[in-house]
Length: 71
Image 1 (spheres, one colour):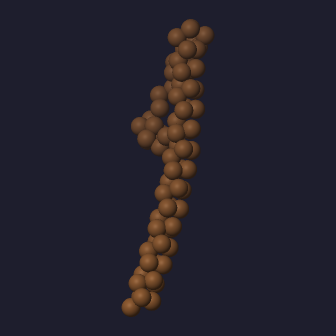
Image 2 (cartoon, rainbow, N blue to C red):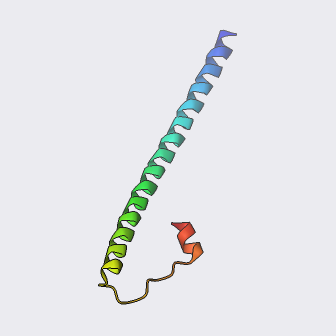
Image 3 (cartoon, rainbow, N blue to C red):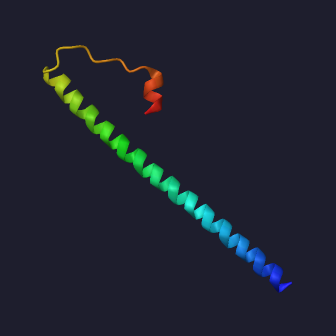
């Protein structure tokens, strides 16, 4: 009986460790996405400043909905 409890506890600990690793991986992926988003926001701000200053004489490019969703 004690051996079964010990084995169940061991399995649960293994599952918890695996789940923790998955969560840590998701956290890392989220950090990467936040960094990418921050860079895109900064690029957008710079482009808007250039466009508003009149330095840019061309029409702004239209981003298709499929491209904007993939960002």
